[in-house]
Length: 172
Ligand code: ADP
Ligand code: RBF
Ligand code: MG
Image (tube, rainbow, N blue to C red; front, side):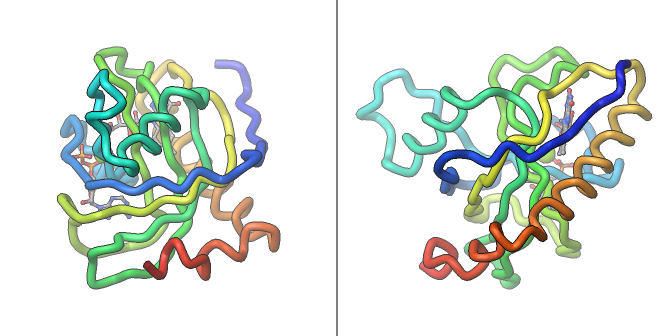
């Protein structure tokens, strides 16, 4: 595996996404140290079958490159409505090579202490960090995901991204 470089390519306009947290593939990400809240994606072919919110999610997943993104997120219907930093994965998870549909998975860099399946998740996606990759081992994948978390934590500390936790999107 060639050395992996990360940088934050800020999106021209940050993507505001909202939807329900659904069950993933039970690969035990949580046990591996990076629980990922999978966002529900409505794959209906007809655009008029989608709500405005579902359309935004589809537009994001259809028009942005697959890979790792830095974001802010809130469990909008949870007890803890804090806005936290996120390392987010969008795509096919090529390391495993068995997905039929792309996923959007948000690893919130915060300890919630409980699951929040079926809750409403709000995300503001700020920028692209790296493409998704196939690694030589599971250990390597885990190591790089941890490094993505560290990278996103640092990148989102930049004052240019500090306004998001206070944005009206998270207050509604
Ligand atoms: P699944 O395969 O069902 O997505 P994961 O092992 O990826 O399972 O765990 C994800 C679930 O863990 C989320 O749906 C959420 O309910 C819970 N969870 C708890 N803490 C976090 C967190 N910090 N970030 C993301 N999900 C979390
Ligand atoms: N899966 C991959 O196949 N390749 C990757 O490079 C990759 N990077 C990830 C980075 C982050 C920050 C996160 C949260 C997940 C990443 N994943 C990647 C997805 C991972 O394989 C997935 O979350 C688990 O398989 C659970 O579905
Ligand atoms: Mg998951």
